[in-house]
Each structure stands twice: as structure tokens, then as C-alpha cells.
Length: 200
Image 1: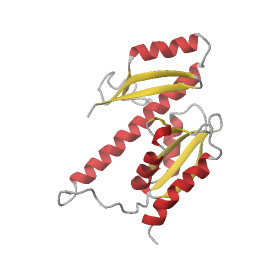
Image 2: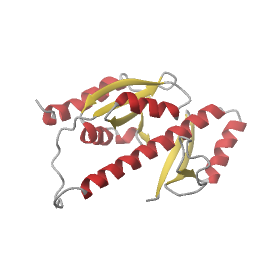
Image 3: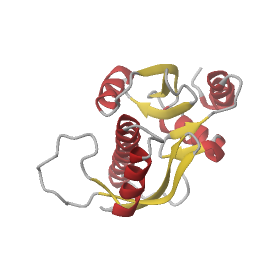
């Protein structure tokens, strides 16, 4: 189920636009299967541009590695979620002709970032936040911090992703730079959804 994505890599004032990334191609076999970026491929010209930034001293190799690992993890999570949703649809006893009514989901929606870039925030969903944090940390060179969480699952996550779509940088990562209090903003954005759909 290979898929292609077009993303931009942002390093402060430096941007690499329209980067082509593919997920799910069986390239490289099992050689690097345990790497956080396993299963994700990026176009060579973008890699060359990234190396040029490193060579010029505009960014560090660690920043480049961290960004690429975060990108790969975000794509993996998206594909895993889409796979889980597809399995759920396939297991439904009767086909759904209309969009399923939004129902409250007990899974956790979370917001995480690092102390180095606190305004770059990932909004994701997990049954077990601690386990998901542990998994994400493996793909990050800097310590991740949990900033906010709430029950609500996929419906709340989708709601927040749509609410902050204009700030999306890639996958589930959003750039809140210049915002006074990003976490309060996320909390306030989630409130109408929770008031409407949360189980009493």
C-alpha cells in the first residue's frame, strides 16, 4: 500500500519546498528495518539540498536527522492509523452509506513538543500515551515533552487537525510560532468538541 507525500522541511528561515516522500516501498530489504525511518524514502535532490545546508553551516547534522526521523515517524503513524481504520471498516457487519455519526472515543489525544522547539507541536492519538511517547522518543534526538492530553480519540484528533490545518508543517506537526500560549489555544479549541460529544 505504497503512498506518496509532498512535504516541506523547515529549519528556521530555511525551507526545502515540495519534497517528495514515499512510504511503503520495499526498498533496502531488512537491512535497516529497526531504524525509525524504515519504510520511508525521500528524493535524492532534497537530500542533496539538505547536505548543502549542513555544509554551509546553516543547520547541524543533528537537526537534519531529527527532522527526517520526525517526518518518518509521523508518516508511519498516519499510515498505521489509516490501516487500523480500514480494518475497522472491513469488520463492520453492514456497509456504511453515510458518514458514521461522530461518537466520543476513549483513546487519548495528546500534544507534544521539545524544549528546544516548544512551538513545533505534534497532535496525535494513542491508547497509551506513555507507550507512544516511548516509541516517538526513539526517533527523536531531543527529549519530547507531553504538553496536553484529553480523551476523545480519532474524532477529536481530526477536529484539531482541521482547526489548525493552516499551521501544519507535515504529518501531525504544527507550527505555533508567534502564538502567545499554544497549549491553551489547543485546549480551548478542543472544548467545543468535548462539550458536544464527551460522554457525561
